[in-house]
Picture 1 (cartoon, helix red, strand yellow):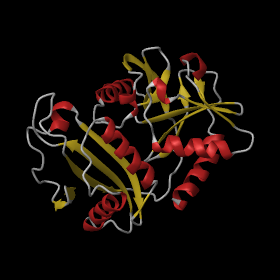
Picture 2: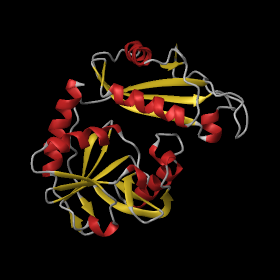
Picture 3: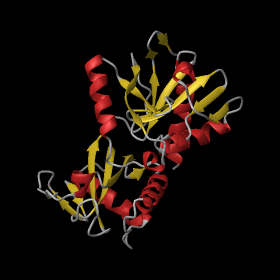
Length: 281
C-alpha cells in the first residue's frame, strides 16, 4: 500500500496523471529515511529540510503539514503494510499539483509515501570491494538548487549508467570548477591523517541529513579536525580513507579509486557513533 494525500491505496493504483508536474518538469522534492519499530531516524532533520526546500521552490505548505502529522502518516503507511516490527525504507515525495507549463497554475502540493522492508535495523559498514571513478561527462551546478533533494536527478542517472557499464560501484561527481562534490547517492568525506574534509554546500553538494549528523559527531571526537573545504581530484589518491554517507546506508566505505586502495578504520569508528545517535533520535 502507498499513501497518496492520506488515502492508503494498492501499489498498482493509477495515482499519477499524465499532467503530473514531477514527471513533466521534475517539480518535486523527496526524502528517504529509515524507520525502525515505527521510530523515524533523524525525522526532525528530514522534516525541516523538506519544509525549507518547499519554501525555496515556492511551494505552498499546507496548514496540516506539521511534524506530527507527517510522522503519523508515515507510521500509518508502515502499519498498513504490516511492517511495524521491521526496519523499513521510507520515501516521501512532495510535488506541485497538476496544471500549467513551466509556470504552474497552482503552488498547492500533493504527497506520496512509499515503504519497503529492509534487512538490518542498524547501519552496517559495507564489506568487500567498493570501487569508484570520477564522472567527468557532466557537472553539478554550484548553487542552492543543487543542495536540495529534488527529483531532478538526470546527472545521477547517467552517472549510474556509466558506473554500471564500466564495472564501478559508484562515481564521484564534480562541479564546473572541477572540484569533487559528492557521489551518485551520497555526500563525500575524505580522511587524511587526523583531518576529515567534506565539500561545502557552496560547491553544489546535497545538504544531506547524515552529512550533518556525521559532522556533529566528528566535531566531538578528540584529535580529529573537521574541514568544510573543496576537494581536488588530486587529493583523492593521497587520502587515507574515502567514504560516502546517506540516510539509508549510513556510511559506505570506498575501497578503491584508480590504483589507490583505502582503509576504513575511521569509518568503522564513526559508524558506531552514528548508530548510537540514531537510537537516541
